[in-house]
Image 1 (tube, rainbow, N blue to C red):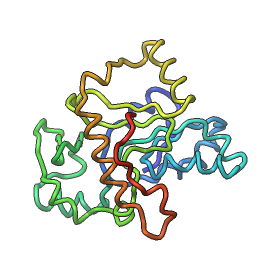
Image 2: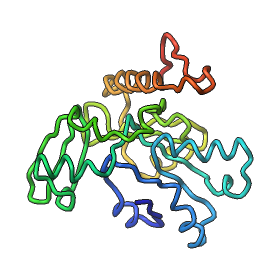
Image 3: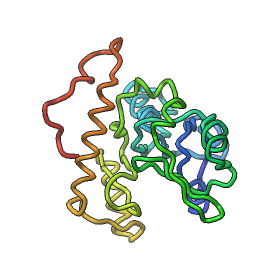
Length: 223
């Protein structure tokens, strides 16, 4: 469910993925009620696109309050029913006992009892959210910073800095020692996979939409 994080503890408490949909922009009224005037939105590409679109359309106070957007790499999300109907019914994995999930070719599931399980992705396709089948934005291209867990290093996060605002924040965090970084050259396969998945998603561009953004270049520029 959408949450507002106001400090380090709140951020850590909401860490982790469940790969089902959370309409994070709906937390806006809660943030405003708490007195927030500068808000960072974290969400998939479909959500991270909202602040820049509002700013481009001069949506006034709401657009000005969204001062940063962090987009998560996302090829699709799944209906919440996937937990009782697949994970629990077929594999005996109760949602309350799941502590961590990841997708690396398969659904990776870690349980409270320390056990680890893998669920084939092909078994999960039936629970794909309908809207995701027409989403062309794997890499959250409108965000200030895009980030996601793809590549060879499972304990590192691939990060793309897309705007001057995102670059300033990222550099400040690095200088302050808040984050640890390593060069993308350490994992060139991550960039190759990023390009591949971005092109696959872009092919979903709706036929009813303006055609230009859906065109696929012969080569994809480096991030």
